[in-house]
Image 1 (tube, protein in one colour):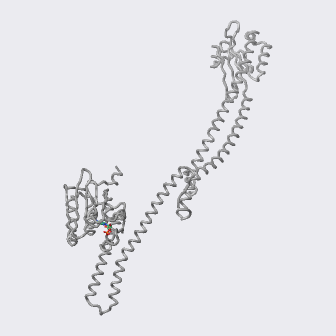
Image 2 (spheres, rainbow, N blue to C red):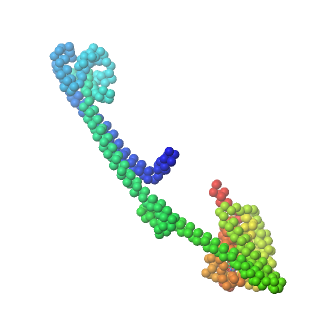
Image 3 (tube, rainbow, N blue to C red):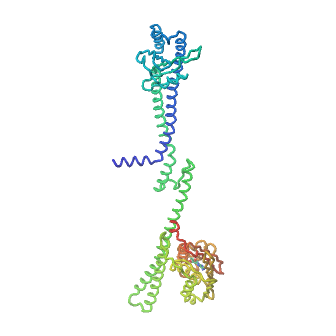
Length: 485
Ligand code: ADP
C-alpha cells in the first residue's frame, strides 16, 4: 500500500507527468471554454428569438385590443375567445392589467381581479417593454404597455408567458453534442499528450541511459545526446567533468604506484643489506656489521622521511583540514628556520642571507607555513654548489606578505619547471640521483601556501640559480566563515 503511494508520488514528480499535465490543460481548456460559450450563446439566442416573436404578437394584440376597445368589454365571451385564441397561437398565457395593475384578463382565469405589483409591469406602465426568463419553469415572459396609438396614452399592461420547452430541448441536444465532442477531444488530447510527453522526455532519458552505460563501461565512453540544445550542453559539461574525474583517478593511481615504489626502495635496500650480511655467517667482521647496520639505519631514516612527508601531504589535501591560525612575526619565523638549516648550509659551504625590509605580522598556521618555507630554503642549499648562496627576503604591502627565496644553484631545466610541484617529481634525474630527496617537498610547499590562500611562482636559469616568490595575505581568509556571512 505504502509502496503504491510512494510510486504514485514519484510519478507525480516526474517531468513527463508535468509535461503531460500541461499539454492536457492546454488542449482541454479552450475546448471546455468554447463549449460553455457556445451553449450560453445558444440559450441567449433562443431567448432573444422567443422574446422577439412574443413582442411581435403582443404588438398585434395591443392593436386589436385598442382598435376593438376590448379593455372596456373584457367580460364579453367573444372578446375572451379572441384573446384566448391569441394565447393558443403560441401555447402561452396572456394576462392584461389595467393602469392600477389589477389583472382584468387571465387566460387561466386564476388571477383575475387581483392586483399584482410586478416589477416589470410597473416598468411597462412607464412605457418600457421587459422580458424575463424563468429558469425553473422554462418559460419566457414579455411585459409591455398597451398604448393607444392615437393619443399615445398607456391604457394598461400585457403579460405574455410562453413555454421555452422547445428551446430547452434544443439546448439539451446541443449540450449533449458538446459533451460528446469534449470527450472525443479529451481522448485525442490524452493520447497526444501521452505521445508528446514521451517524445519531449526522450532526450533526458537518453542522457540517463548514456550515463548509466558509461558507469557500466559500455559504449564510447563519452556522453553524446545532440537531440536538443539543453542535452547538448549537459553532454558537454558532463564530459568535461568526467574527464576531470578521469584525470584525478589517473593521478591518484600514479600517486599510489609512486608511493609504493618509493616505500619499497629503502625496504629492498635493507633486505639486500641484511641478506648479504646474514649470508656471510659468523665469519663477518664486526666492522662490516657496523657498516651494513649504518646503511640500514640510513634507509630507515629515508623511509621515515617519506612517510612523514606523505602524512603532511595527506593532511594538507583534506578539504576540511583545520589550520591553527595565529598572528606570527614572519621575520622571526624565517630567522628561526634559517638558524635550524644553517648546519646543513655550513656543511655544503653555502651562504644563508636574510634581508628584511620591515617587520611583518601575518595570520597563519606556524607549523604548516614553516614546512613550506623550510622546504624552499633547504632546496636552495641542496641544489647548490660549494661557495654558493641562498638569499631570503621579506617584504609587505597593505594586503600581502612577500617572501623571496633566491639561490645561486644549478637551476631547473625548462622542460621540468612546470612539473616540480607534482608529487614525487624530481627534475634533472642525473643530478637528483646524487642529491637526496623524494620529490614531495615542493608539493607540500604548494599545499601549505594554497591553504593560506597564497601563491607561489618560480623562475630559474639553468646553471645560474632559481627564485621562488611566495605571496600570502596578511589576514587569513576563512572561506567557511565567509560562506555563512
Ligand atoms: P626533492 O625531494 O627532490 O627536493 P622537491 O619537491 O623539493 O623534491 O623538488 C622537486 C624537484 O625540483 C627537485 O628534485 C629538483 O630537481 C627541483 N628543485 C627544487 N628546488 C630547486 C632549486 N632551488 N634549484 C634547483 N632545482 C630545484
